Amino acid sequence: MKNLKLVTLLFGMVFCVTIQAQERQKNILLICMDDLRPELNSFGVSYIKSPNIDKLASEGRVFLNHYVNSASCGPSRYTMLTGRYGDPGNDAIFERAEKLKVNPNAVPPSMPEWFRNKGYTTVSVGKVSHHPGGLGGKDWNDVNVIEMPNAWNEQLMPVAEWEHPRGAMHGLANGEIRSTEKTKMDVFQSFDGPDTSYPDGHIANEAIKQLGKLASQDKPFFLAVGLIRPHLPFGAPKKYLDLYKNVKLPPIQSPEKPTSVSTWHNSGEFFQYNLWGKNPNTDKEFADEVRKHYAACVSYADEQVGFILAKLKETGADKNTIIVLWGDHGWNLGEHAIWGKHNLFEEGVRSPLIISYPELKAKGKQSNGIVETVDIFPTLYDLSGIEKPSFANGESLLPLLKDAKSNGHVAFSYNGKANSIRTMQYRFTLHKNGATELYDEKSTAKEAKNIAQENPVIVEELKLLLKNKLDKLN
Image (cartoon, rainbow, N blue to C red; front, side):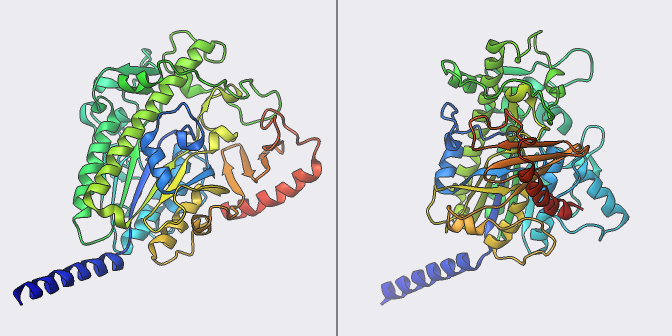
C-alpha cells in the first residue's frame, strides 16, 4: 500500500512538472556573430571547420538566402533589435536612444523590451547592440549612455585584461588594445594560448554563467550573446589556425574592382591595420594568409557557440528554448577587390541565419527562400506565442519553418548612398544619384556584370518593388 502511494505521488509530481513545462513560455537564446559571412560548412563552404554551428544547423532550419538590412554593425543590429527598418548610419541605435530621452513614446519598444514587458528576464552578454556591453562614452562603459533603454534586466561585457569594452572590441592577445597612434595593430594574429587569450572566451564564460542562473528561475528568459570574432583584427588561438595549415583555399570569386557604377569602397578599415607592406589584392599568398586567419576566427567563434549550447543542454532548458544564430552582415574577402563590409554586393549583405526549437519538423532541412533580418522579431513572437506588435516591419518566417520549401519574399538592404533589393533571380541597386545596378544571380557572371542598361523593363519593375520597401523605411 505504501509503495502504491509512493508511485502515485511520484507520478503526480512528474505529471505536474510536465504540465508546467508545457505551459511555460519558450525561452529565447539569441547568438549574434560579428562580420560572419556564410563561411560555414553547413552553408556549403566545405573547408571551414565549424562543427558546433553545423550541429545546430542539423537540428534547426538553415536559411541559405538570409540578407541583412544594412552591411554595417550599427544599422544591422538596429533592425534585428527593433524589427524595423532604420537609418543606415552606424549610430542608428544611439540616435534611437536620444529620441527616447526627449520623448519616451518617440519610438516603439525594442524586441527585448517587448519580451521583457511580457514577463521575460532579458540579459545581454557581449556585443549584441553596436557596442559590446551596450554603453556609450569614451571607452563604451558610461552607464549614463545606454544604447537600448528599457531593453535588458542586465547588460554585461566582461573586459578582463582589455580594460574596457572599447579595448575588447578590437583586442588581440594579452590585453593588446587598438590604438589611434601611428603604431598600427597587426591585421591578424595567432597566439598559442587558451580561448580566454581573446575576448570571446570571456564572453562565452559569462554567457554560460548566465544560462545557469536563468535556467533555474521560474520566469522565461531572453538571453542574447554577442561574440566579436570574426571581426577585425583576425586574432584567434593558434590551435584554430592550425586547422587550416594544409588547406587549399578555393579561388576568390570576382576579384576585380568593378568598372561600372557600384557600392565598391577602398576597404579603409582593413588598410588601417598593419599589413607589413603587403596588399591582398595584388599578393595572392598574402590574401590566402588573411583568409586563413579569418577562417581561424570562425572556428574559434564556433567553439564558443559549442560551449554555450552545451551549457543550455546541461541545464535542461534546451527542451523549451528557441535558438537563433544570426550573422550581423557579411564580409568581403577579396570579392570585387573589397576587404571589408559596408557594400551592397552579395558578400556584404548575405549572412547566416539558423533557427532551432524542439517542435521543429524536418530538422536540418535548408530553406532557399529569401528572407531578411527584420523578419526575426515577428518570427520570435509567433514561436513564443506572445502578443504580436503592430509596428514590426518584417514577416514571420513561421511558414518556412513549417515547410522549408515555402517561398520567401523580397529582401531590402541599404547604405548611405544606395538602396537595394534581392529577388530570387536579381539584385537591383538604385543609387541616390539615379544610377542603377542590375545583376542576374542565376547567370554565371552573377555580380561581375551590371546588366541594367540592357534590361530597362526589368529595371522599372524592380524600382516599383524597391519603392514598396522604401515606403516602410520612411
